[in-house]
Image 1 (cartoon, rainbow, N blue to C red):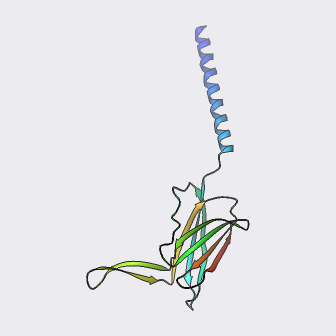
Image 2: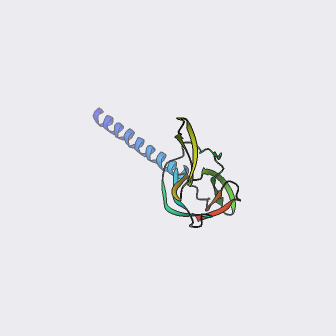
Image 3: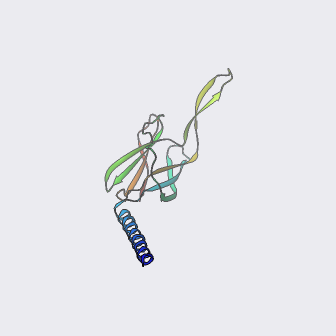
Length: 158
């Protein structure tokens, strides 16, 4: 008789624990937002006249994850790209990136000293990653070049 009570008691405890665990996970998934990142890969190139840059979207990928830290938002060069994230028509966030077509390289000159030189590429790729937010409906990419006015290069509706 005591074996029967022991077995029933053990069965009762195990079955209640399983139900409690299931209700915890279902309430958790309903209240916690998903951590997702959006990766956008672009190609930027100079037009044949060398006056304008052209941007095209190569790939758009959404995956699970979250940002470890925010990117630094200070241009280190007079040539950079500005990415503006819009919620409807209102700008919500701005990201500054070094311009992919203008690179500063270090090299050893004839005097065996390090020097820097700016090189200009005809074409390159770049990517941006940011936390996915369904409220962000559009991004726009602007180009800032030394001694020229800012230019709008590309708009993507998400």
